[in-house]
Length: 155
Image (cartoon, rainbow, N blue to C red; front, side):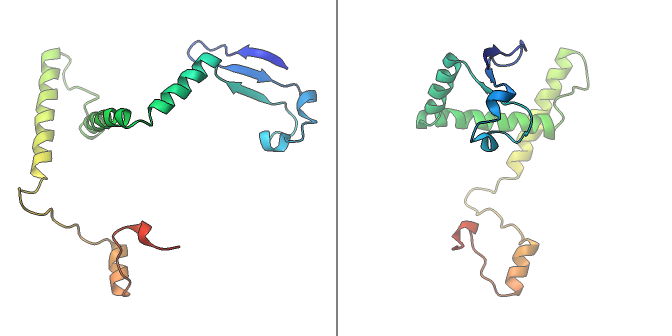
């Protein structure tokens, strides 16, 4: 067994790789649960202790309500950036000059804001209901009750 065997890629995360020889791996009683290969040996990769401790600490921190509240804000921003990049073609500018590119970004942001505001119901009114789907029409035609949530169905 080669121990430890650091990864050689400079861009990859540092990993410690344990390589077992074929002779070490073949007689193992739990080999079938660990690898699907019948002939080759097994390689096991895991991060160094410092990185693993950091991962455990950060994953525990991510379960706190404070972290989740901060991430909710970031999630909203990421959704907006994604909408601009994919929905409005903001990955490419029509002009090379920075002032014109900035102007394109500003006008696109204004258009998106107008689009968002036009979709909102006026204050005091309930939002318009969506037309039923084909599946909901089928349920109505056959007399099945239409549940609000799919999880309401008992098993």
